[in-house]
Length: 65
Length: 544
Image (cartoon, rainbow over all chains, first blue to last red; front, side, top):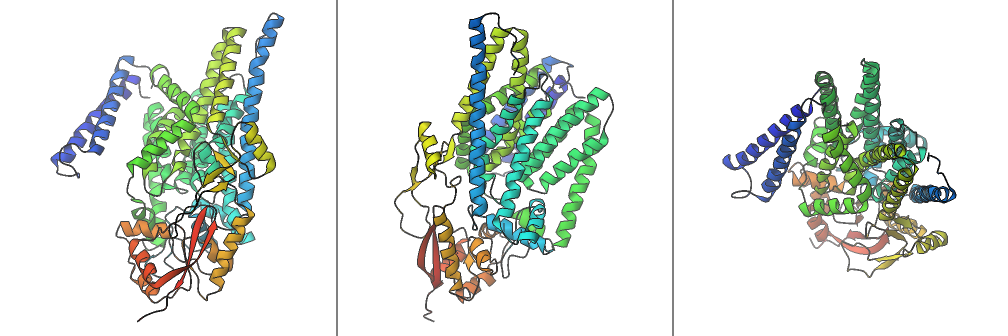
């Protein structure tokens, strides 16, 4: 069984990984735009929201998710 | 409905208010069910394509009924293939064996599937309701059928809502299974196996079910982490084995037609427009579902329904793909109906403990919320005097004016359409008329003037006259956009004017095909059916 804190950590990790992956698109030279493109902006926002949701779950401790 | 007894006449009188309002809400949603049945019966009687692509699903069913796969080589005559998984068509096969290639067969199966979904939604709410409020469960189920999107697509020969039926059954049965396991303190693997089979059925009805598969395994991961992984492995293996078996049985055409051909461009404006429309039409049930999911996220355990709703809502972004549309919200609508029923049940349980005043207030509010939702999804055919009178009595127009859609003639003036829909101008939802059937027969008769099958964007006309079904235009376009089709044979046949008749509705064919048609054929007749102008074309005399 996953707890609220564990779910929070999973979401936080997913959000951070998502942000890194979105920037990696530029570092690897993929994508149609120079800099942050419109799709990347939306994906960045989504990743940030996921990470933020994860953060808010951390104080809820060992209650079942 | 249970209302704790009021203590005086005034309180007794007030306590009747919610009962009256709930009765009106039930009446409204039963009215939508009647309207849905009227539309469905009218469609069952209509022997041609109502929505583009229906005829190709019928063709898939015909091929299955003859023991053949519809996943084929598009490079050669009759240039036909399908991009949909097989289950919906296979289920419809017995009806085609019995009654022949009739449009009503698949339309009936799809429509019955939506009724099963509504019952599953109602049962999902009812089984978790402490006080067994039948009216609330019924409203949750009926709200699904009352959605404009479900109404539009439910009675069509399309597999999408059959997938939603399997998805809903899977998640409702998963919830019942896990509840029972937690109550009994032991696993019930046979029940979970049924859930897996329902998920498999959903996926092999339409690929879009992957979001529900993800939701089920995510929920299991939260509740029974190790078990989720243990079940995911054989599930993935069986899914993969079936995929591999179909692929080798079709010489790789399954992969080409169901995967490669589905990599379509994403249209951001289409996705945003549909999201706005979905929320505007389903504001009440969507808002309650979101609030209840957030409540569960922070204050109690997440239910399978909340996980399903969130993933289904996110997956609805795929409605922005070329060729996708409103039906991509159907799974999110089903999930929101269940969550709304559960949340309102919870609110009533709480209010009952607070005494009759709270109970009456909350019941009244709930009834009003359902009435607001009923108003938001307003849709009604007005092709009979009775229906027109009801629409007018409800303050709605009895007709709207819509210009026929045309891709090959001068724009036409708006014409009265006897169908009113809060979703806006819609060519889906209006029951086809006798004039539409006559127009379809007139187009089919044009094929009989020649010797060959028509090169047609709709399959219905060739079906009607018993000739080959040639091409699946949207599939060809999908493949063309992914460089997965060789048009040489087709262009040669068009160049040689091998087809006596060309029938276009929306010019969905790949550009080189349309170019060749434009060079070698000329429009001879324009016939309007279902709000579309069909262009009938004949070979032009060769100058070579």
